[in-house]
Image (cartoon, rainbow, N blue to C red; front, side):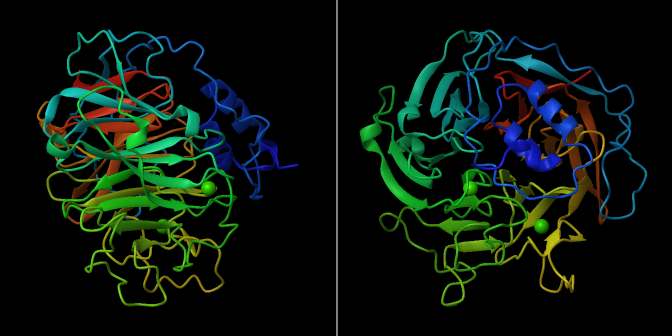
Length: 443
Ligand SMILES: [Ca+2]
Ligand SMILES: [Ca+2]
C-alpha cells in the first residue's frame, strides 16, 4: 500500500493539495500535519487524490485590498532587508472574463495568448483540455481547442501541465504540450500538435517529441516555453517522493530535476542545440540547460529581456525563486534554497543559489512562479516578478533595488493559485485553480 498523506510533511501535503478538489481539505491536511518533522513519503497513492470537478466554483469576491502593503511578513529575505519603497502601491485583484459560464475553467493551470493572435486567450486545464475564448470581458463562451482527457493521467500532481505555442504558430499552427500520459506513473510527455484552423485540434496531429518515465506521481515540473533563442525549454522535477528519493537532483545522466533545452525545428523529433552547456561532455545528457532542481512547477521568460525565472518548490522549509543561466547547478538536494539539506559539507561552490527565498510561515508552503510584469496598466510594477504562494494565497512581487532583491505583498488572496498568466501585452493575470481569472488593478 502506498503511503498516505498523513505520513508526509506540510509542504508535501500541499503538493497533494494541488490535486485536491478544494482548498478546505488541504487546509485540514496541513493542520493535521502541523509539527511534522520531515518524513518523506511517496505521494503516488491512489486513495485520495483523484481529481474531481470543482463542485462550486462560484466567483469569489474581489480579494480584500491590502490595507498596508508592507513587506510580506512571511518572507525571509536572502539578503538584508531594506526599506520598502513601494508602500505607495495600493493594488487589488479584479475579476476578468467573468462573463464566461460558471465551471468552464475547472483546474485552471495556465492562461496564454498565441503569437500573432491578440484576439483569443487559451486556458490550460489540468484535466487534459485547452479551451479558448475571445479577448473581451464580454466573452460568454469557451471553445474546446484541444481535448486529450482520454490519454491524460491526473492523479496526484499529474495532468496537462504545460503549453507553449511555436513562435511561428500564426503560420505553422504548431504548439507543444506537456502532459502526464497514461503509462505507468504518468510518463512525462512532450508532444507537438498542429492547429489547421478548425476546432478542436485533431488528436491525430500529435507528434511525440520526448517522454521520460516517472518513478512517482509527484514532482513533475510543469511549464514549457520557447526561449528568445527559439528553442523549447522544458522543466522537470526530481521525479517525486520526498527529499530526492530517486537521487535525480545531481544525476546529470537523467533528464529529471533539470531544465532542458531542445531544438524542435531542425530535426525530428528534436535536436540538441550546439550551444547547450554540456554538449560534448559525456557526464551529462546534452539536453540539460541547468540542473539541481526539485520541482520547477511554474517558470517563465521575461518577455522583454529574456531572463529565465524559475520558481522551485521547496521541501519542508523554504521556497525559492531562481534566475537561471546556462549550465547552472541550482543545488538540490545539497541545498534547499540557501539552507544545507542533504550534505555533510554544505559546500556551495559551483552552486547557484536562489535570488529570493521564503520560509513556511503564516501558511506559506509552495511557491507558484509567475511572470515579469511588462504591461502598461500598472507602471509601478514594470519589470517586477509577480508570483504567489499556493497555500496561503498571497500574491507578491519581487524586485531589485540596487543590488538587493526584495519582495512584498501585492494582495492577500483567498484562493489557490496554481498558475499565473501573461498575454502579448505583458499584463499578468492571477488564476484561481477553481477557474476564476483576475487582473491586477490600482485601487
Ligand atoms: Ca514524478
Ligand atoms: Ca535551489
